[in-house]
Image: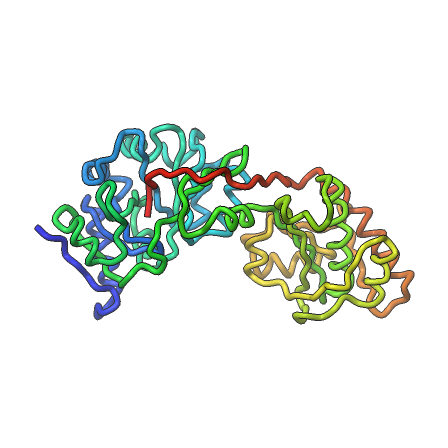
Length: 389
């Protein structure tokens, strides 16, 4: 029997289409779903018969794993409690999005251990697990309402082109799956990038939407200094820390980003595009540094989410950030280890700015030992059939 097709865009109530898909998955059926990359076929990871059927459909070898589609980046720790820092960065910055992360999954507390044995073998046959959070509201809505994760793979037969529309899914697999959710053509029309993230860095396993160079940038370490207006304290901290890190990595300040480290500053009440104060620029110039190209920026959700570490100049700054973005609390720290604030020198004499810079610089060294600057670019891509959509 041919698969039923539900057009999510024209349905009287799109929620009904979502609930029908969730019900079908709970009953052990196979459901084709749209993603931002290509169309995929999903099965409930709690139903071993459905996953076995998916394996037969895709003609998967025993050592060729499927991907687990999870609801959010926060769920990754449930399946990989000791996810490497570089993998955590990519998850935080790329999800939801067109990246499949392959990570070691041998932790005894992993939720993977609660899946049926045959499903564990299907998604993690050799100790590594592929995780994905698609950036498509339809499949995310299905995932949020489904008990357990989804086993997800591209909606095509082995060796055939990926499906970018419900019509292509129906032509390729229509007689062997149960339901197709149609949300029009795929946004990107190519599969996700598959990246191996380990303690030794990154390796691009399959080229996809995000290229190797972009992935390398996304995997770098981002440090953000925050004050109020981003014209005095935080620009000085940024400049001083850039020099310290460059010395630590034995590279020039200009080469920091190539080394995988980005150091920036922002303000919780900043206007975009303001220059550094004349006094701040003079103080850092006296120390052989340059703030002539500095432009202030307000602290926003994207910068907070991308940052590995946010160092605030006062306790009040930290409280304001954590109050607005509580999920970032563990990554937002006070610069001064003794709990003291760095007072705003604005409007004061140049000597006050010098003392401010001294206080900042005296507290920077301690962070070098605590910051993980490891960030290696991906290895050379290798051609292989990917595990997910």
